[in-house]
Every structure is written in structure tokens, then in C-alpha cells.
Length: 302
Image (cartoon, rainbow, N blue to C red):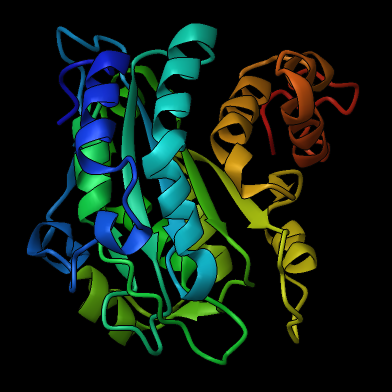
């Protein structure tokens, strides 16, 4: 998948017809997971080169849809997707973006703790995002199953970027909670259709990191208390890859900025390239990322 190109006019028409003036419940009207988005029924998701996108780059955006975190998907469908696509095209940190959306929940309590769209390059990104089920579940176990996204990316996605060019894609998970410590073998079988032993979160991240630059965005606006501090936990799991975001409406700009830094741009230059308050939000969010070629000797984000 991944033919076509993002077009702001097509986005404007789609938004006017399907999003503008509607409540989140009306926009995201699915009452259960679509079979097409069920990872257990998916053999593989492909990001392949095409005439439209000859040097495709897979970008996975995995959003927490438990509890109040439906605001993330809501923001993406209203403004974020268009900002993400148009700014990548304008700034060119990577070529020919193919975007996949994941909806993330809790494998211990939710019916559908992971849903996965196709990789798409045009307005089909928005259409499929809107069809995701915002289950709004989660449990009192101080964590969500962001690790399912890592395991899915590792085991059930393929890309020409990696297979032809040895170029990693990008994987962003986004939410306000800690990550649960493992994916059990039963969860992998039931929710992903994979036969694996129980895997720790560290193992899932390591597997995904073989072909993706992996980041986590902590939504920090209304973060409640946990037994585990999610920022501390994530920084231990993904050193110099954690983005603490104090304004969820700037998620798209922050993702684009993280990709720019990963591709060699200076953090100060990236932050200052945004206008007004966005610049300050982005500067704070990306402050812990490492610049390529920094004096530490890091050549890529570690």
C-alpha cells in the first residue's frame, strides 16, 4: 500500500464533509474494531515504493485510545494529519512518507488493545484513522500495552525503505501512562496472531528498533499519579528518545521536529522554525533528543 500523495485540497474537502462541526463521538463512530484493522488477522502491512512515492518512508503513529486519551486521535483527525503530511513534504526530513495509525489499549482488560491501519500516502490515511474504534478502556494497572505496537512493527510490517535501502522508518507511540512490563505469549497469540514466548517490553522495543527509529511521546498535560513515573520509566527504556509534550495539539509539529533532528537538523534551528507558541512547545518537547554528530560521538539517535 501507499500509492497517491497527500493533497491539502482533498484534505479540506474531506474535513468539511466528515469532521468539521462534529463531536468526537460523531467523527469516531465505530462501536467495535474492524476486521481489517485486527492485527491477529493481518499477515503483513507493507510500505512499498511506487511511481508516486519512489523512495517511500514508513512512519507509524501509535496513539493511546484509553480513557481521556481519545483527544490524541481527535486532534489528528481535525488538524494533525494535514500538518504532519504537509510539513514533511515542505521540510523534507525524509522522502515520500507512508503513514500508518495504530490505536493502543491495555492487553489485560481491553477487547481490542491494538488496531492497525494500512500504510497510506494520501487522504486514505484520514479515512482509515476515522474508522478506528476509540475503545476508551484501560485498567487500574498503571500502564498500557504500547509494547504491542513495538512487537507488531517488528513482526508484521515490511518496507522497501529497509529492504532495498537499509533505511529505517519511524515509530512513535503516544500516551500518558507507563508501559506494561511484557507481552505474554497468550496476548501475542490472541491480539497479534503471533506464536512467541512471553517477551519483555525491552525485547519488544529492541525488535522494533532493528528497522525503525523508535520514540515515545509522553502527553504531560493532565498526567495523573502512577506507582511508576512514566517519564522516568520511558527514559530508562528509550534513552534520548523520549519526548515530553505539554500541549497535545502540537503533536504533529513535534513528530516532524523529532524526525528532522534524527535526520541531522539542530534542535535550536528546528524549534525556531515554528512560529509563536509552537516554537516554545517544540523546544521543550525535543530538548532531550540527541543531535546527529554531537560531541558524544552519536551518529544516529541511540
